[in-house]
Length: 305
Image (tube, rainbow, N blue to C red; front, side):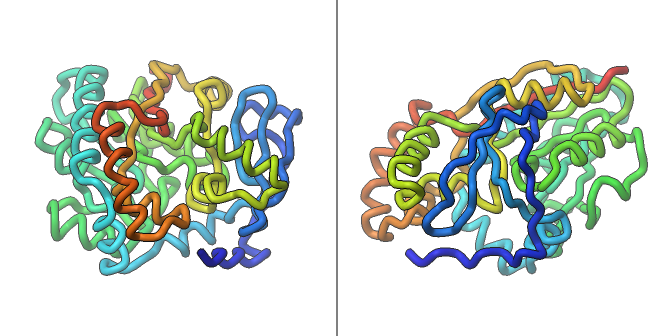
């Protein structure tokens, strides 16, 4: 498999302190032999994060894709997993927000609007934003959901009872800025749900191979730590981030949620399409029984109110 092109140097920002707990006790792993990316590991809270990260302007540029490009991405997802996850989370949000008139839910990076359409059915006034013009177009065509184009900093403050972020935190260079912006759009006492990639046992095994070969055996680490996943949290690092920023943590729970089809995910690790298709069957059997690596964190937190 060919190595992805390195981002231009002027599109990167460099960090050397833990982004979660602010510790300077950070281990530097060998650069990836394929990408040159350097993974840092906080020895205090366990956060793993890229030393060199895309700037916010570069992220915005990368994610502004047209409808065809966005549809191509959604075609390799597992809709049954996504729908099940959405329903489970909405049930919990419904309980935590409670029955109140005119309650509103804002979804950050709302994609094709499927989650907001489900929230609308549960009595929430739906709102959301996107960086992708194609996603905004699809959200209206598929779900009659109108999305704002741009980031949270441009929105009116204090309007929403709940804000959700599905795999958004790992995509931004500075999670603190994002989480502070979320606070601003919530009503006092408002609820945030976020799902973010978790550092799992699979990642640990990949890191052992990476370190033992000085970055040459890097397929797993390259797949999991990349410009689309610039940070992988632990429960401890996620709690440290939220408490440092003044959030009241409700719960932080590891879950098994793989939204890409298994064959597509295995192929992204460099396995041939035919072999990936064969290998996907036993992996799917484990996923169906919730027996695979817990790859995400589901996080619920409130602002004081």
